[in-house]
Length: 216
Image (cartoon, helix red, strand yellow):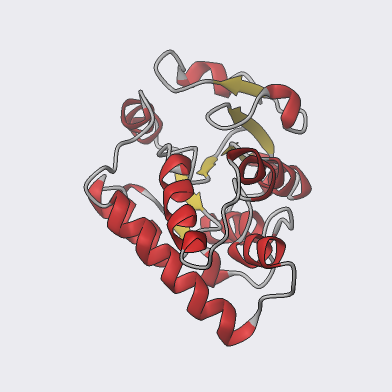
């Protein structure tokens, strides 16, 4: 039985990836580095900042250096995105239908808490979510299932009664590794680029709660 729905944030609640690309391009340009969009698709979307930084700098970025660089890049993202926060089509209506049916909901993102708080406050999400977790709340990032297992624990629900909405390979993998069913949101990737999901959507406009309830 479906008891809780957990959303990733970037690419799932809002289509933020183009704005993360802009922030990273500015961040890297300051260092005379110019990754291509193809490289971003392979090595940025859905990945943790520690992975992204280490990949593009071609060495391990960790500790204080990671915190400093991450803060610089994410501050750029928030400056760019703060006046452009816009949910994926149909999301707010779908969320209302979930809450009117008394299902629990949560957000589980690899993004920093400051990003989550900015987006959630703009969309008035915090009072609708029984669990909100960001990168600071876990020690292992997606595809490790920690953030989803912690979400289920917060919601006091078994993983098998949770449905996750994800848009990236690592995110879908994390949810599957947690033993949860997954809806693939095709905002950044094709079906073929994701692990097998229980359902796929382009946006929420035509998604009915009955459709996801039938997955259980």
